[in-house]
Length: 239
Image (cartoon, rainbow, N blue to C red; front, side, top):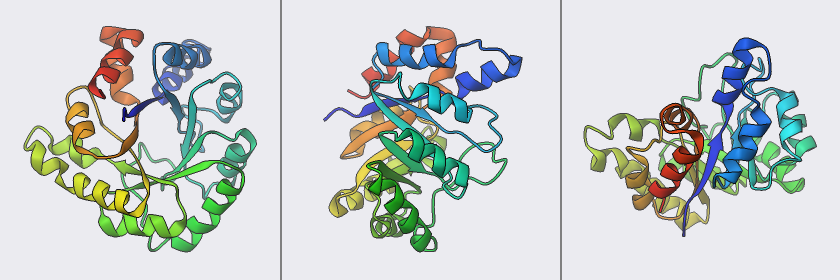
């Protein structure tokens, strides 16, 4: 099984928005990512639209041929409406707060079980695959199953943070989390701070890893290596 690479294009939107025009063209970049081999496109619209705009999602939907993954906090009614209107392949539920710089924790799937179960049923009834952003915590993964989610997305910042110190120790909680997810029949995605240095070791040790979503590191690498070459480098790390 080869793990799919979904490219998060939020940073492209950030650069575009900084000048107020349409350079770089987000739609062209997304289609190029697919053309260069990416098996998915991820966007994470936030309420302040500081990078991906709601309008972008609507324009992207008819153009993409690979998997379309929309991330965000479903407690925003506008987000729910956006997902239901555009029906991506997958919606990834992330517990971001207003104004949060970037995602920094997973759901407490036990405390929020009732809420997550209700919103997940809404998306699943619309034919959208659901994924819940969680830390590498066995109890949170077991809780994710109870919500009815199809998949979990493992929040990998701690792995990336401690990889250079002791990669075996850094990955151990994720190996255990993946083992439990596989036992429960949950699909496994992963993302946050995965890069060319740590991706291969992660992918080789996480059994059943279906998809990684990578944005910041990949777009940063593209400044040096070019977008097409960079996507190929990341795909090579997943083999």
